[in-house]
Each structure stands twice: as C-alpha cells, then as structure tokens.
Image 1 (cartoon, rainbow, N blue to C red):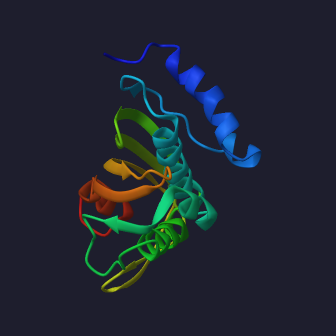
Image 2 (image 1 turned 90 degrees about the vertical axis):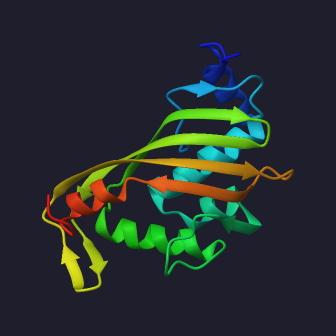
Length: 178
C-alpha cells in the first residue's frame, strides 16, 4: 500500500528530530515516497547519501555509510568502502561544481531503499579521461541514476547497488560523440 500524500511532510518532521539541525535543512526530500510504514532511519540514510553527492561533503558520507560499506557494483579503478564514493564525488565535483541532486522517487521496503536520482549542473571544471584532462565549456549535465541500498541496524548504508546513465553523461561531457 503506498504512503499517503501527507507521508513526506510527516516523515520530514520526524527526520528533523532525528538529524542534527544543520543537516536536516540541507537534505533533499524525495519528490515521491512509497512504502508502507517507511522506516525513518532508512529514509534518513538515503537522504544523507543524496546530500553527500550534491554537496561533496565527506561528513555526510560518513553519516550515511556504514564502516563496512560495500559497493556491490564497484566501477573499475574505484576503491572499495568509503574511499570509493569520496574519490568519485571529488572527481565529479571538480568537473561539475554546481551539481544538484534530486531524489525523484524513493521506495522503502524494510531495510532496503531504492531511489531514482536526477543529477543536473554545468560542466565548467575539469574531468579526467585516459587521453588527459577535459575542460568544460559550460555544457549542461542532466542524467539519472538508480540506486538500491541496504541499511543496517545502526541506520547506515551497508551495501549499495547502482546504475548510472553514463552514456548520456559521457556524451554531455564531450568524452563520447553525440
């Protein structure tokens, strides 16, 4: 049974009490939340991780991810554990400093949460490629990602499976021809 249209507002109020005051106002709210009796801790972990991707703030990644965090779809060359997302975020924010991340949909089922994320911004920085650094010309970045998280008993993401629309992203960056 889907959560009522009032559930996001009720959930937001409960999360304000569960999170530090400075972090609560910075966390993206899902545009659409589904899941019977969504666990506030599971939702909070997912919102913190989305806020990390938007801001690049390592403190948010540390709040969102378990000490034994495992990326189940680890890209080649990325370190496992917390170091992986920290590295990826640093590289991406160097390329797209004004990155915005919206949670378009969130589905919670027990200790699992699935998100449809929307990434936007302008490529005004530098992106590393095998051929060297690629400098942005202000081109728009607009792509989606799908994530599945498993959240542990401490309310932190222990496992992540993800799929990004990298073909669209690489075309927008100019790495691949349109």
